[in-house]
Figure (spheres, rainbow, N blue to C red):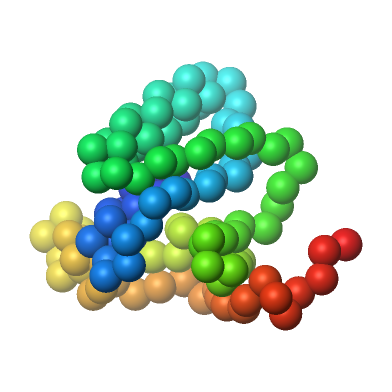
Length: 120
């Protein structure tokens, strides 16, 4: 999951719009995975700083839906989160390096603007 988030951050940094802040709300891994998750997120956070982007990280024990919110009011909800690519057939298969060429798992993606939603 960390690599999927890292790839998403790379896409934002390369994109035409200047991203200033990313707010990440995620669940905390359990057991030994927790320290690896935190150190990985801290490394991504530091790396983003080099590009002038602030990564705010918050943990929740109750979230289920995966969503990405942008400061311009747009929100994306992805049923599978960012883990929607299928594994390539092998290390030397087309799509191993270029994710644009990988098949995807079936999922839903909802895109909407916050002004059209109600808080409950």
